[in-house]
Amino acid sequence: MVFVKIFKWLKKYAFQIVFIGAMSCVIFVLDLPDGRFHAYFLDVGQGDSLLIQTPGNKHILIDGGPKDYVMQELGDSMFFFDRTIDLMVLTHPHSDHVSGLISVLKDYNVKRVMATFVIYKSDGYANFLKAVKEEGAEIFVADSKTDFDFGDVFVDTLYPFSKINGQTFKDANDSSIAMRIIYGDKSIFVGGDIGKSVEEKIVAKYKDLKSDVLKVSHHGSKNSSSDVFLKAVSPKIAIISCGKNNSYGFPTDIVLGVLKKYDVKIYRTDLDSKVEIVF
Image (cartoon, one colour):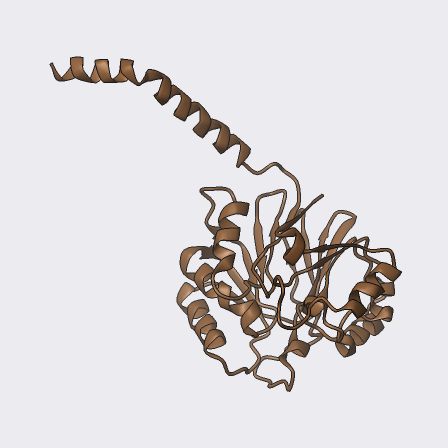
């Protein structure tokens, strides 16, 4: 009698069962890695967060923005069953870059963490350091020799030139990690919130900084994106991560003007939401 009832129930809802199953398969297939390079400039409000998915399905998360906005963005950008971050980078300890990483460390399997580990007093940074320790991830103190090779993608750390862990900075922005994410003949320059003085040091040290995409430093502040730096990087596309109607007035007209001067295509998370670059 039980089997008869089950058979009748299956017969009655056969179409719904088949439809749900088919749609689940479609969603699963569409969500699979496609063997291409993806860079997701996440919409985390007034802050920064960049997710790189390599063709080999490795994930690099650079900064986490403020609060927990990054969690929803990761859920929308990563494969449904993938809960692994192969490399997490904190460019510098300000809250609009570090806060979201705490939740990621708790909810994802984070294999490696790179940061400068400078001294900076804030609850958010202290909680990040605690979460890193509890996660048990492999820790890397950033300098220009600390690079990562993912086979098809290379993370080339440019700044700081030497380790600065344990040091205190008057402006923590100038302790930001700067790097190029390189895939074949394509590259993305990411520099946290570095200012013009650090940009000039980087330009003076490296002969080749040319990058197809520039993550604009410090959300488009007037204190970054100098002429000499933009000439050296020569980006085709610039991504500005900032919050809608933010109180800082980012991005500034000065930076927008300089980018337009060099004929750089501009995308902004406050206007365009999440921006995806595919190579």
